[in-house]
Length: 608
Ligand code: M6R
Image (cartoon, rainbow, N blue to C red; front, top):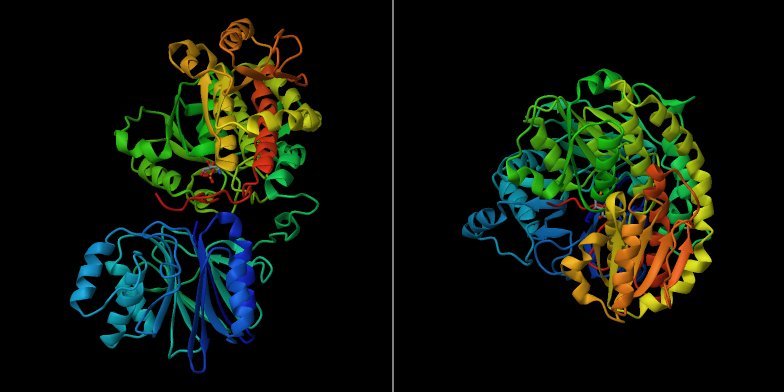
């Protein structure tokens, strides 16, 4: 998704801004651009494609400047192109970068066209530049023009703007799209992602919705939603640069897969003690809250939704609570009925997913007891806006494909399940069993990662196919869905997941020698039923690739069988996810795709 970085400094900022764009590349984008204030006007450079191309242009043209704004764009309105790339400008005077979507852009465009403005791009963002220019022409200062403009803009935005005639100040604004200020020495930054400026400062100010701010090298002023000067807390956060480098790995995704034993350890660390989960791990008062809960609603997107689907089984089995689960993008539109004593759980790696945040905001108007978030980014909007939150502590996840985020979300959701069961005085023996199993989990993940070589052997047979089917039953169906999502997003192979018992109700028609079938066969009460389903696949010429418990007897004929390490059944979804991540990674490697930044995708999906 789009990324903003802006700087006002006493030194040259061109290089800093481009480095910041590089650090946001993981978010996914299609073009990049920069506007730098110079004595003779504004250097305005935009390129389609990678930030490196913009950097090459900068090296050629050597613009020097102490004030500038820069952007990576992920197309929403208008195709990826140089003309649609940011910064956008009005009359060569006002330059802006924007994240988010201006919902009423067509209406505003018509108004501005009547005032004589013409539009160079197909974007919704360009109207912001013209709107500011129009307000300036009414005699306003830049900050007043931003106050007036925000009253006209509907939708979500993070904006950074500068004017050709002001060499020292930037104006920024935030509404439902992340934006923060970073305080350096003799320089002040703005960015949509703290990682963009993580090498420049550890002091961040997170703006609130409706905030507008003016920044210059030596000072900043923040104004709230009603344009009154406001003070906002400065948070000191060390975002380690080590966590954002690939080290010895070829891709961030690969690094993040192999980080899972440590990541899991960090998720459970300090949250369990002796034979049980600790009280109030979701924040002070959470244990009291959990005593009252009678029903749960989960909302999330993508991988995080799959984690929620696994957890719905745990919540029912261990905490004995009914649980409903929805795509965050659908939840608000089905007019949900909320029973008394319900809580809303949101799950999000980034904590900035627009659909999940919109569902959270919608839920605040309903009669939930509270909103509870599971999130990896402590500085995120979701973390700030939830009543209670548990951080997964997985460390930055840079690869677009979620790996350690998913397994740590599962561990966090198990902690939630245990907390609810404990608050409700339920299943002490089972809780004790799960806590012991959680402690053993990092070691079992390490053993699972050692299966890499057998998985690499499977990859060529899948890499040369156009389709793949993933099968699992019960709690393994969402794991199969996660496996299919991983394969499709990074290898571009069409992949679907089915509960194995559903095969004979339609999908069996797809089975032939060109349809690899990847199946999850842990030891369970329905293992035999799954084996029969796999026999049906074999009988129709399908090739089986099975990850199974050694006790489950399966003859895969010409396919492959990978015996999995033993693990408590309740936690096996975490373990069985890992070979599917490795398989997708190895298949994508063979197909030569852009693994960390797959086409058309973004890490943090900040538009609805
Ligand atoms: O940051 P979130 O967990 O809210 O992101 C939700 C989805 O966009 C995300 O899980 C996506 O499906 C994954 N990157 C897929 O690997």
